[in-house]
Amino acid sequence: WLELPEQLDAGELSAKALEHHISIAPGKMFSTSGAWTRFFRFNTAWHWGEREEQAVKQLGCLIREMLR
Image: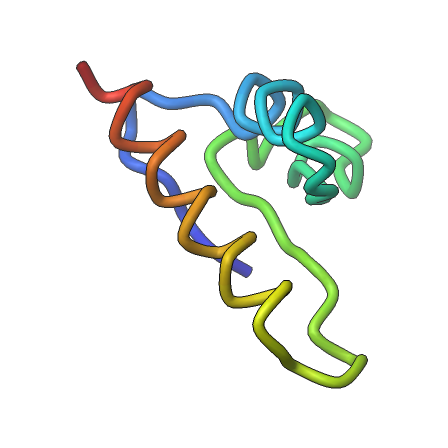
């Protein structure tokens, strides 16, 4: 699980990430009350390579853009 800064929403990040073919799971998906909107997870169960590293870097860029 990763926690975003208070003013950000993981659902919004998920939508932006999908535009870059990156799939994350917003915390809200795992809550019956709609909580955990600042949290997300992504699967790291497979082999970690250049593609995954670039995806994490792109997530960082998207988060920085959302903070502006």
